Image (cartoon, rainbow, N blue to C red; front, top):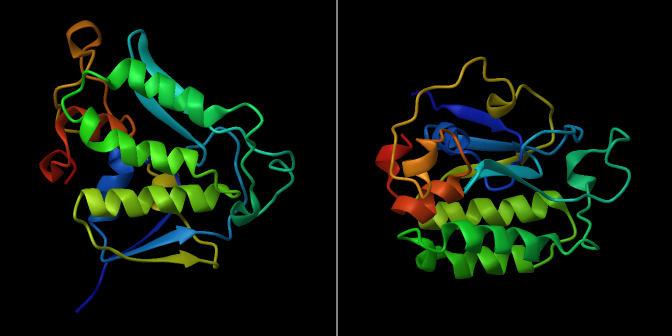
Length: 192
């Protein structure tokens, strides 16, 4: 009997496709040995805004560009980014059907102020695991390898679901899992 194992980079509120890939694995390994890479989803996510897709980015402490292992990358709090991210989420998702079901937990995660980026992203994965009733066998990988969500050659098609600005912008594919969660709740049929 063989078990599927997937290796993934750490992501801030992962994309829907990343969560889909994770949920198809028997074992999920999160890369801890890789070096931080600029302009990746490690500290960024995309959500819907009234003007289109909007990037939320976590500022990091200097040293992030010095080939630092991902597990040593520290979060900067001098810009009060958790409050800014929560304001954006509230402004754009407060009328979404499931917003009130999950915002308190999302707020708690963002306001917990972990020192390291990987700690924040682990808390997010734990939240998603509980919310989607998904119980993965997961671990940190200290042996570098090819990550599925970092080297996907093409993006699979997602099932469209109702979104907050769909009437003006059309369906916006592969946003952060937060978009799906606030708009339709933890419905796995749109992921797997």
